Image (cartoon, one colour):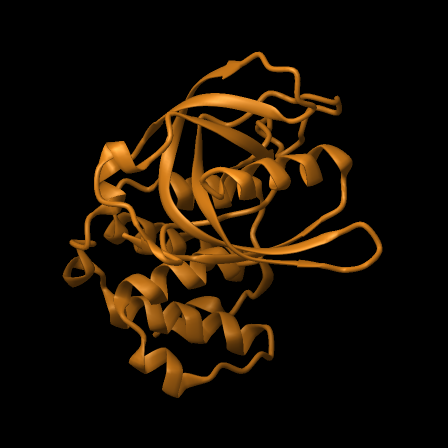
Length: 225
């Protein structure tokens, strides 16, 4: 796995303790890119510390109930799985904010939070080491079904796509980019994140899209035929 200028190949390349950045509805996947606007003082401090060390922060969703509702408090409970991201760019806005870009390294399981004096949260994690492998299982993805689902979604929402770029994209890029960009809720995003492999993520994305379209469009069955 290459993120920015750094290769992540084994467990020793990944920190055991990482700063946590809880974001509801956010999905960062390995090799995916995520822009962020940082303005809260605790997270500005977190970014400063990350830049001074390994440039890694952990994106993770606050835990939600069956209705997708999040606990309203300063430190909500967190989901059990998130993604490590490396800061590959940072710019200062002049009004106290940072604009940063992350590249996903690998997913992780949250083991326990660690007490510290900083305002942001820190945790001990177990990385998903198979995410670091270049063998992504791309050949197992049903690309025609994925593209058909994507086309149906675009048509239903009167959107356009750069189909030349879509056709040239690898299966891994296609699945992960579509998953990250999909306008679904926290539960759907977490399901896509926790999919054990690329094929399962693609199948999950297709199923979620079909359900969304069926809910909004009575004629969806005819669209897919």
